[in-house]
Structures are given as structure tokens and as C-alpha cells.
Image 1 (cartoon, helix red, strand yellow):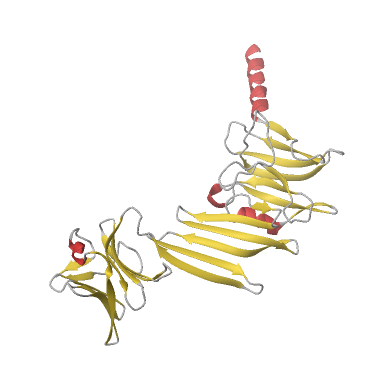
Image 2: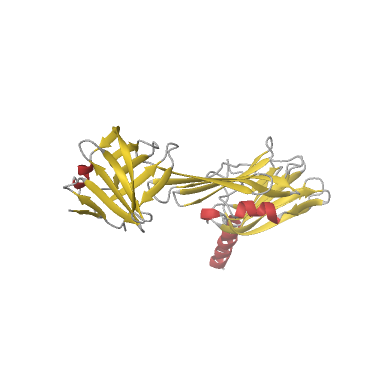
Length: 338
């Protein structure tokens, strides 16, 4: 009998310890919140988050969750902590999201946004209470965590990413009580060492897209072999290798944009370049166009042959850096030496 009593007490104690309800009362004079955690010993636990009216103690919002993750401060749960993009985000946030001068609620539902970051249900204040907004909620589900609300500029901002090398930043205004995208900036560094920067802006009728492709020639793993400026148009011709593996070519205009690069796709599956020791030339073919970079004692430049017609872009010798013969210093996977 004593054994059964002890076992029962331990069972009751474990249930009491595991299930915990936290009151959150640091964000409003009119409302308070409660957070119920089913298993406090787990990083993610079943539970719910609720909002109550202080005058009536009536529950006005409740969001169930399969994966609550709660941070405590001096054993207390706090609202309105929003460390964007990767820091702590409270389970309850009380801000004005549609910029009508009345605060709304963002209630955590699970880790459902990009990269398993927190996601929220957005409840907008109305004359008859708080109403779930699917449009505002989408901003917390389809991006990285909670969005930023700039009350001064009356704009919302989100961030999304893919791995280390693709980031997207979006900006919204509020029209007809819904978020409307007006700017999208995307930085794509997936194709090392090339960087693609695109920007879309709303001009009142449509999104206008501008794209700029640049190259990071000062990054680790990049070695310049030869570069020079074309005399007639000031475009820069650059030959470089990546990780002592592959030879690459880029044509850069005076605005530092890459107009053309070769090979087109992945750097580890390149078609061959041909280096002619006798004539000190490098030749490659892209579809039906043949390119030949030459360097002699008196001249440097590149010829471009299209449909049997050859165009000669003479280089400015004073802008030359490096030597074409340096191609043979390191054996490169995609270079044939004749």
C-alpha cells in the first residue's frame, strides 16, 4: 500500500511538473496572455497561446500548437521580444500591423516559416474584436519568422533565404487592409564567384525589374591570369581560374557589370579552352561564336568570329595585368595546351 501511494504521488508530481501555464502580462493595460506547455522538458511541446480581456477575464483568442518553443526571462514569459531576423521572437506580440492606429496581435502557432523559424497567426483589431487575417498571416509563414513593421514609414519588411548564398528582402505597404508588395530585392551568390542582384519596384502599374550581374574577383579561390581593357569601348576582358581547377572568362563593362561569361553553367563541367603556346592565344567556342584572346609583344586583344565574320577588339596595352602564359603554371581541368 505504501508503495502504491508513493508511485501515485510521483506520477502526480511528474504530471504537475510537466504541464505548466505561464501568464504573460507585460504588454497591455487591456489584455493579458496565457501560454500552456504540455511538456516543459521538451524543446518543442504541444500547447496553446491565449489572449484574455482584463476586465472580463474572457478568452478572446486561442491558438493551438503542436510545437511550442518558449524562452523564459527570470522564469517569466514575456511578450513583444522580436530580434529579427534570427534572434528570439516572443509567442505573443502586440503591435499595429495595418497602421490604423490600433494595436493587433501576432500569436505563435508553430515553427512553420522558412528554415523552421517561428510562424504566427495575425489577428487585426476591428470594431467587433480581433479577426484573423490570412493575408498578414502569410507574411509570417512564407518568409523567415516574423516581419518588421515600420510605423513611421508605414511599411512591412520580410526576409527569405535559400542556404548561405541566396537572400530576398521584400517591402510591403497596406492597401485595403492587406499587405501589398512594392519592392523585392534579391542577392544571388549561388554561382560563385558571380553575384546576381535584382530589384523589383512597383511603379504604380506594375513591378519594374532591374538586374545587375557582378563578379567577386578578390574572393578566396580566385586567381586572375590576364586582364586588359578594350580600347574602343573600355570593357574589361578577364581570364581567371577557380580553385586551381578551371579556367574562366568574363567581359565586364564600365559599370562593373558582367556582360558575358564563359563557361555559361557550372564551373566544374566546362567545355575546353585551347591554349596555343606558339601564337600565345586562348580560344573557346560558345555555340557558333569563336573567341580568341591574343597577346604578343606589340598587341593584345580579342577576336570574335560570328558567321564567318571576324571582329577585332584591340586592347589597351597599358591596362594589361598578368600574362597569358600563366595559364600553364597550374594544370587546369578544362584547358587543352597545344
